[in-house]
Amino acid sequence: MRELMPEGIDKFCYPSSNVCLRSDILIPAKSDVDTESRVHHTSAGIYRTTVWALCDQAIVSGGNFLTNLVLIRSLSPPSYGVYALLLNLLLFLNNLHAAMIAYPTCIIGARSDPQALRGVATGGLLATLSAAVVNGALIIGACISVHNPRLVPVVLLAALAWQLQETLRTVFVSQLEYRRAIAGDAISYIGQAGILASLCVYRLPGLSTIFCVIFFTSVGAGIFQASQIRPHGVEWDALRSYARELVRLGKWGVLAKIMAFFSLQAFPWVLAYTRGLASVASFQALFQLVALANPLLLSFNGLIISSIAREANSTDSPDGMTRASKQIRLAAVIFALYFTGLALGGRIAMNFLYGRGSPYLANTSLVRYFALAYAFEAVSMFAGAILGGFGETRATFVSQLAAMAVAILFVIPWIIHSGLSAAVIGLVAVNGTRAAAGWFLVRYTAVKRASAPIEVPV
Image (cartoon, rainbow, N blue to C red; front, side, top):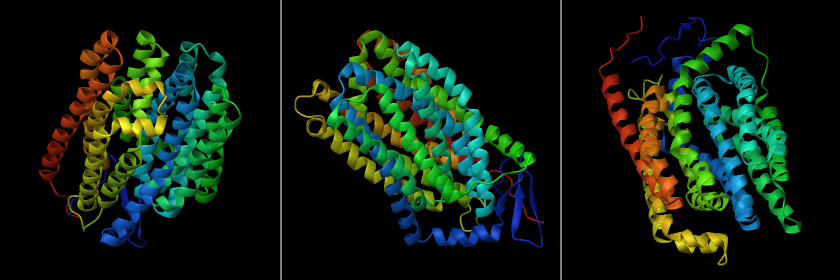
C-alpha cells in the first residue's frame, strides 16, 4: 500500500494507541480509516452521503439564487449592476478564502478524529480573521470605484461573517457530515432570501440594507454551527503547524483563484467601465440561469475532494478513486441533462423567472452559450476536484494559468470591443481551455503516481 502522506509532513504512530500525530493534528490511524472507508464505500453509504450533500448545497445555492432572483425582479438594472459588481468581489474574496483556508481545512479535517477536528475549526477561524486585512483593502477600492464609499463598513462585515460561517461549514464537509451542516446553512442562505423578499413587499431595500441582511444571517448561522462543533483552544505550536499546512496546501490554489478572477469575475468589471451598469446586470441575470446548477457543481466538488482525501490512507482503494469515480459518473449524467435542457429552453426559463416584461429578455439568444460554457465548467471541476483531492494544487494552478492567458489575450479585448455577447461567448473559450488543461494534468498526475516508488511499512 502506497502511503499518501503529503510531502514534507511528519507522521508518528504510537504503538500503544490507535492514533497518529501529523503536523500536530490528530488523525485516525490506518485501521480506523480502513474501517470507516469500507462503510462509506457501500452503495447505500455513497447514496446517503450524496443525497445529504445535494440537500445541503441546494440550500446554499438555492438561497443565493433566490436572493438574486428577488433583487433582479425588484431593483433597476443600474442598481442591480452595482450589487452584482460588489457580489462578484465578495465571491472572489470567498474564492481566495476557499483556496487558502477552506480547502486545506477540508483536507486536514478529512484526516482528523472528532476531538482534533475542534482544533482544526479554531485554526480555520483564526486564519479567516487574519485575512480580513486583505478583504478590507479590496472592498474599500471596489466601493470607491462604484461611487459608494459609505458601503465599506457593511460590505466588510458581511464578507467577514460570510467567510467565518463558511469555515465552520467546511469542518462538516471534511467529514462528509452534510446532514449536520443543513440547519446552519438554512439560517444563512434561506434566511437571507426570505428576509429580502419580505422587505421587497413593503419597499425596495437599499444596498446597505441588503449587505446588512447578509451579515446578520451569516452571524446567526455561524453561532449555530459553532455550538455544534465547539471549537476549543489549541497550543501555539499546533497553530504554527496548521499555518504551515495552509501555506503548503493553499499557495498554488490562491494563485489559481487570482487567475480565475481574470477568467470570469473581471468580465463584469470590464463591462461596467466600457458598457455601463445595465450591461453588468444583464450578464448577472444570464449567469443566474446556470447558477441553478451550483448545488450540484459545488456538492460534487466537495464530495470528490473529501472522498479522495479520505481514501488516500485506505487499503481498500489503492488508487484513491473508488468512490470518486462513481460520483463523477453520476454528476456527468445530471449535468448533461440540465445544460442541454437549458440550451434548448432558455427563453422559457427567462420568461418564467424574470417575467414577461423584464428588460433582460432581450438577451435570451445568449443563454445557449452560457449553458455550453458551464458544461465546460463542470468538466473542468471534475479535473480540479481530482487534483485537489490528491493535493496537486500546483496542477490546478497550471490549468487556471492557461484559462487566464486566453481571457487576457483574447476575451477581455473582445469584450472591450463588442460588449456583452463577447463576454458570454468568450466564457466558452475560457472554460473549454481550463477543462482541456485540467484533464491533461489529471492524466499526467495519474502516470506520475503510478510510477512513484511504493513505501513498505516497517
